[in-house]
Image 1 (cartoon, one colour):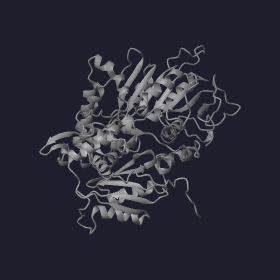
Image 2 (cartoon, one colour):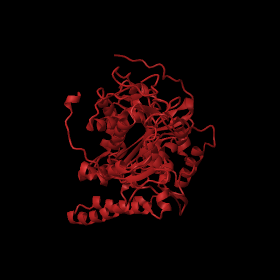
Image 3 (tube, one colour):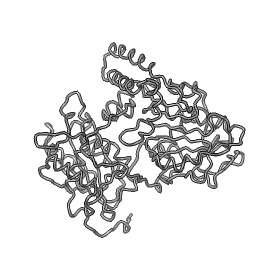
Image 4 (tube, helix red, strand yellow):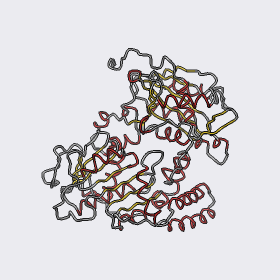
Length: 553
């Protein structure tokens, strides 16, 4: 696209965006749910930096380079275009800038991971996993961090913040944005990103219980979404507006603006149908946290007390696959919308996959793989579908994602408790239907029958021992932090209770009609099946053929 192709359209900001733009802050923590306009705000902040701090150098930071390439950049590039900045006209990414472009006061030695505007303002694409650029050796004028809840705080504090020290003698060195740190993220949950919530402390100190107000607001918003009666919605809408006006965000004593917002602030742009669609597709918990921005309450007495996400989870992206896409926004967006296992460095394409399932109104599977050489049992990814979607939709999710997996072999760990039931209109059990669908898609399936599943006490002790890593002869359990996000969250949120036969998993929510089935801890049942399938053959050393793949054609 050239500059002459740009069409002029009026620019409208929603209320949280306007508050951000008119507040004279020096830094910010913006915890906003999906579809609230974070990407548009990042683009506008970049515009302000370009206009007010020419030739400055900033970090555009994310935990992983995969996140920057497939999530941050496509939406940021699209938002920049909406305000008049066109890639390869007004800025370039990953290449040496044209000769007519100015340079930042401290240009990088290589431009591979840098976004440079025509007036010399630069944004270094810095990832903490080492896949992108590094902050080491840089002198930065500020930091923009996207999806900050995923940031490794120690690395961020040790590597990025110390680099925020540049250009103290420039004409704009006294500008309020100079050396600002701006975090944009969705709501933290579990152990991730709790430090970001500390920014709201000054509201509590001033007698404002915004956490309680936000919970009440979410209750009203859920009532609005779930009630289809127009008059009832109108009444609830008035209550929502009144409560929203009570949530007034302002800077603290150090000039930082902490704010929260959710999709209701952006309904004019996204529409109620979009909101209703998300309500249908997402689990209740995910919808509350990621869309309505509700703070999840912690579970004190959990069924998996030895789970430590900092130890048991990892990041593993294959940048050889992603780097070939350069910075073409259309290709990057496609990678984001239609990802597959080629992006996963933890998935060995020459090894079989292991699947455990839990069937019901909402159906779940977790995909794992045994890495005997590393003595690891890796949980690679979780999938689920909600009614009215069926088992065939779940099978398609799996086969689409792993279509490039070289060894089309699956070990299917049966759900004997419910999986051998039949649909009224089918001769097949749930387990049989899933196996058939995988075989029809070209996969060889070995069915692993566990028989009667042991009671909760046995499962509790087994998980406790394996997660605590008390026996060096047993495999280490590891989870892909991004693809198993909801699996880990379900494990963290599953409570324990004392039943007739001792320790039990608290599954009260599965029996309550008022609680959606998908909100109950079904993912954890698939995890239990994986553990019960582990025997002496799991980590028995075998010949490693991963480096001897024969390609024919």
